[in-house]
Image (cartoon, rainbow, N blue to C red):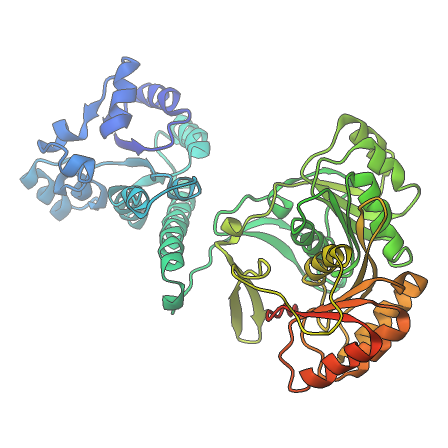
Length: 512
């Protein structure tokens, strides 16, 4: 029995090879794999020795040789055996290959296109496909975690069983498909307009108890090899996350990282109901909760700093479905452990690199793809269009409100304040309404008296002046919006009549 070993991931390689030798398996190995085994004193034939051909093109060509591929692809027939004998080749029964770490390479900072291209594996992919194609005779192993399965079968049957070979073949084809997709996605990012075809590789993480409702089936998949825990992190406490939990966690998590100071985002049914940032997480949480304490019952909390004990204590007895943060102090973990029904998730900061800068949504018979809205594009300039000029304090509140309205469902309206201690917080949020004036009324109603002297942000232009009049009656003193309506002049005039300062950004932030 012969085995060909050519691995980039050398976990458990030496021990695996040593145990193969006990089953009288002859080892052929390429490049660094052969050097690793020889350094441990294991008898191994190098690919160059077996083929009689040296590595060329600085290692780009090592295993691409007829003696290698004929040995893998040969069937157990008289004709194929004769062909092997004619070229001096032998049957190879076990192929152990994993590929250059392309995804890991492109995830590193400052990686050039030249660097990435050199980590596109050619021979390894060809070896995996050849061995998987001939699974009726050859066992192909692309995952070091499967070494024990090989050894178990050798111990039990004297060879790798057909059932195991079939499983390995499916795994190898999935591995090469994902690998090719990662290369394609990387190159498409260089020319995103050329993405006529997009390949998505989904890895099943777990089945969920049900979907949005108990009669719906659901599962969690990770996208294109992204980390496989919830939000790329891990569940530290609490029962299994539901379909709805995951949606709300993601909405809150994506929103909270828009802010550069300690921030809290509270989400209920995909809608932010409180957003705040301050000098401490505890103060940010208190301010976010005050935005809409009724909706916060049974909500999801997201924090952009390590959660501490003071913040957990500030939660009091509020019922919370789940909390997500980049980390937790020991004190916070101890306090949260008393909340038996609260799920606790630790997750890394989200990055466009995780989804390759794209987000996807399904529609009947298709998938929509768009680049992630990361805020105003570089070079965006705000323009005051009213007689009234915003004060410095109002500008700080307007910039916060503008960021806070972007994760809110359209028509999104956010009313916000700058408090005396420097805390910036929403005091009223309206969104998901079929018309903008209703969102303004909803935000003003939730803000109540706190709308006096507050600012307002709108994710898109005001089609009529009625929204400005509603905001003015509530006490709003400054507004930021994209502008661009055919009735901009009427809207600006309404703001001038009410003494409201208004800014046009020229950028819309719809979130349907």
